[in-house]
Amino acid sequence: MPEKTKRTGHHCAEAVCRVTKKTTCRNRVVMMPMVLLVLLAVGCKEDPPTSNDESTNSTQSQAPASPTGATGLAPPTGATTPDSARRDGHYNGDTSPTSSVDTIDDDASADGDSPPSPEFLDAVEAVILHAERATYLFTLGMSDAMAGVSGLFDAPPPSPPTRKKAGAPAYHLQALSYADLPEWNKADLTAFNAALGQHCQNLSRLPSTLTASLFDWKKEDWKKPCTKLRAAALQAADVERWLTPWQIIPRQAIDSNRTPPARPKGGGRHPAATGLLTGYAEYHVKGSPVKTARYRYPLYARPQDLVTVKRRRYQVTKEGRIRPYPTRASIQAGALAQQNLELVWLAHPLDAYISHIQGTAIVSYPNGKSVRIGYGGDNGHRYRSLMRHMLREGQLTRGTLNWQGVRASFEAMPSHRVRATLAANPRYIFFEFRPYTAGLGPTGSLPVPLTRNGSLAVDYTLIPLGSVIWLHNRSQARLVVAQDTGAAIKGALRGDLFLGSGYQDFADAERTHAQTAFYVLLPRGARPKSLLQ
Image 1 (cartoon, rainbow, N blue to C red):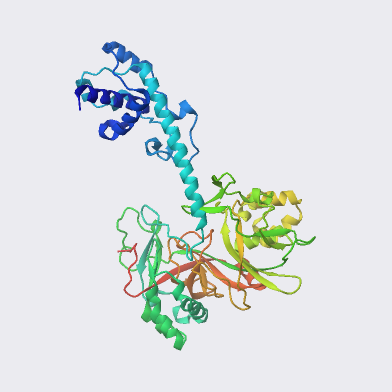
Image 2: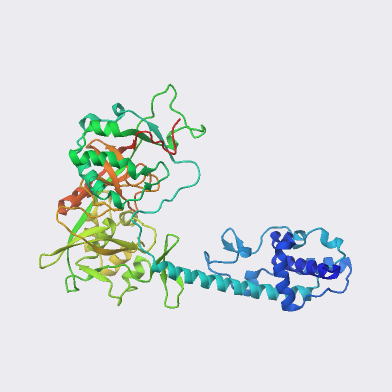
């Protein structure tokens, strides 16, 4: 390449660097394609020589405008932008105090080139800004197109995806013996065997490995107990030959300065850590397949404009763009009206809300027919506790912190205030019809039909679905199978026990709220990912 052409290319690269203020442009090999575009667009030529004083004054007096400020085209947070415009996930210029001159290679002055003139900088800046705008619009259009394609295949997976949390583990597991399990010798495995039976019948539908942060669970680990269960119910001795108990220990219960965490001084095991156990049941409510004067509050099916992109929920507009899906307040105000999404109609807005919280319901029609509805999707917004909100607002007291108290409070409110109170939880659930057989529970997240007192909802990011867990508190000691999840279930020492389907079971679920010790039982030979040394 002729020396003059090379120097001209370096000169243009210097101008591009000064305008964009990107430190990564030190590598001129990477910058040359962009330089060639500038050459084609504005016909880059060497400026006449100027004095060093003029060059310095020109550089110091003219602050290059940032792409965002110059065009007013700053895309919304989270929009797809060119890599050259990314900085910590935002579309901003470089905020480093280092001047733009410092980003240019030292060998530029050695070539004898003088810095470009302000007029040339303006011309190059205009070309780059137009290129950035075109690139941004192109990438945004591509993201919308891909979101539309994603929606075509947007079927919920049989089990939730695993989200592994970064940083130090929040929990550790310590191996125990069955003598360490409180009241293990009194274990009643009736509900466990029923839950295990449902698990074994649906084993072929499960993935080969269910993973989580604390440990994994493989489908092959179920084969022997399932074979045994076909002949007779499992006894405590069968469980002991199959599984090894482990205690869940929160990291804050261990000296955080000791890595890896160690046993207590003098040996032995840490005191049992307790967490919260609550209960849930399949809501049984009266309703109608059509809207009537009594039944006026709908439960919606999943809308067709709801798509999932990287596990986030969006609404596809008529123009083909995506935006966050409407909140509960917007949906209550009619955001989904006239779309023929109503599955069933209920008599009270609280009945619809409780169905959302439970994720499943049995609806009895006036003609005596009953149907089951189950979770079909959600709007992607974070769950907020309605009762906690009402407690803060003085609408509930500690003594009325239950659904009966909520219903009584709503009866004293005008309808618009009831809607505003419910809107404190922006999360909204969509439903679908599920098979209904009397005596058989709803399908959980695995998917496996849930068993009364034998199925537990867990935080699947920490404990994989399919795990066996021993629960112990003052009122009960039972072995259960993790077969469901819930938006409010967070942490390894947190569980929601399925208590059945029916009015009495729902009343029992309201009263279930106890500090409970959680122990996981892993297949013999399996090692947790976060092991207490």
